[in-house]
Length: 283
Figure 1 (tube, one colour):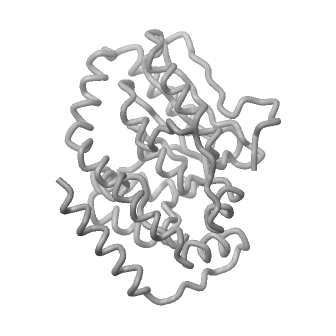
Figure 2 (cartoon, one colour):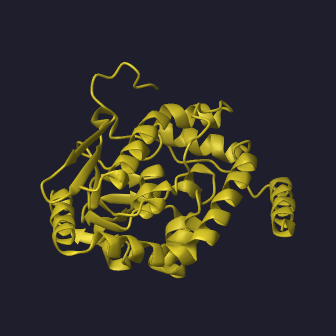
Figure 3 (spheres, helix red, strand yellow):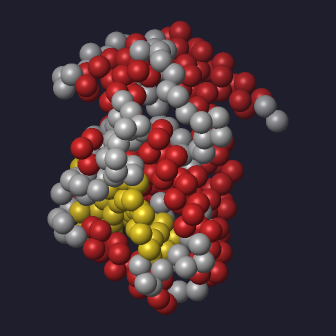
């Protein structure tokens, strides 16, 4: 799956008169499904916004009917079959938005899953329409919590809610995520409007320097644990991606059928136990 011949940019970018940058993922024909190419453009625009003194707050959303349903199924299928997804050698981690010294507000509508869910969590404030469909989904694809979510999500919603979201992989409405405190409540069709109004108020009335320092204060205690969890998840992923559960999880998703997962594989658990012991022993 490639956007090399696309005539439209993969990510749209505009800055208004009060200093709010609106970044919109722009693959509406694929519901803004994530690709490495879109990732590069998005992170590049976050960097541009961070370096532009005219930008005070960043709003992120998806063009069309959906926020982002996760990785494009073409890439998912290749990964589950053992193919390596091509990516730049200097690829930024999924936690990159947490390093941007400006407030990032996401406006969620329609589907928000997988990588879309990760990126929503990596932002600072999230608006979600009450009829949005939000899910981590990883356990239903035969893999673990990715990219440090095992640390970040409990910090956002508490241990009990994080356990529910990550272990069940179930779909939550925007109404339910608002009740958990993960998102702010928006009526259907209003997430972008609400996020922009919120961002414009902050851009007009808050000190950019104070915002940057406050964001760092909020994230600094999480930085070490988040990065450790992200790196650990990458090591675990190298084991789980070769397991049949990942192949079955992706195949069942693409084929729109219930998955047929086998019982716990003692060999895989043993491999992971050795991995974790090794990681704990590393100074």
